[in-house]
Amino acid sequence: MRPSVLLLPVLLMALGCERAPTGLDVPAGADAPVLPAAGAPEGAHATLVAGDAVGDQSIYELKVALVDQSGRSHGLDTFRGGPVIVTMFYGTCPYACPTLLSDIKALLAAVDPETRARTRVLLVTFDPERDSPEAMRALAAAHQVDRPEWRFARTTPEQTRELAAVLGIRYKTLDNGMINHSSVITILDGDGVIRHRSESLGRLDDQNVRALQNVSRAAGS
Image (cartoon, rainbow, N blue to C red; front, side, top):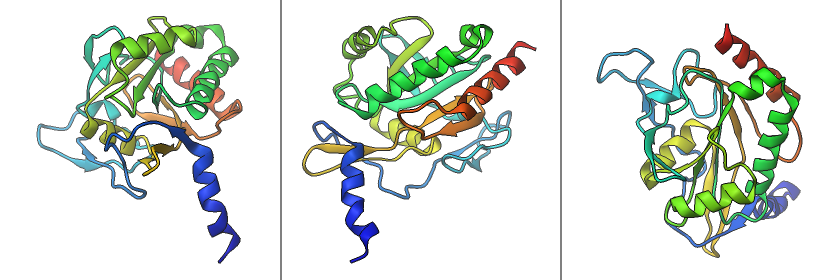
């Protein structure tokens, strides 16, 4: 057996976070849903490749009904018009998700004050069954991000899978109750177009800083 095959289970367990299975798994290689191009007529569709920069296509065309930590309902485009950092998480994750939150805070601390003031953060849970508005509100408080510019949200299992595919995020619940997931920070412009994405968990990515500042300047011009 090749060494890379032997290492794969170890790497997967390093990404895992313990939780009860909920049937929200996305198999590796899952296809991204199709989205209408921005401004396209009703019923028009174009394939959005998971994880890619997609030209002028907006992820806001994906019809995702979110409920946030305050219990309010809104669309994916709740922060339309300005730069948005979007990622996915779940509240009982002991390592990867807290690190992801710390990475986002470090990214915001590294940009100029104007960019920081314009930027909003949207985190959508993999685990809508357990991440109730109350649980998400407690999580935001625990990480000291219980502010209007940070939005924790949940949606239906089907729409969770669709959003994960569009963002190029993979997650899978194992038989032992662990969940393996990739940790991706995605930067959207004011129209919801993906301008940069990074999987550099646990360190500040200079490209994230530059991308966020560029998107902010464009929004402010």
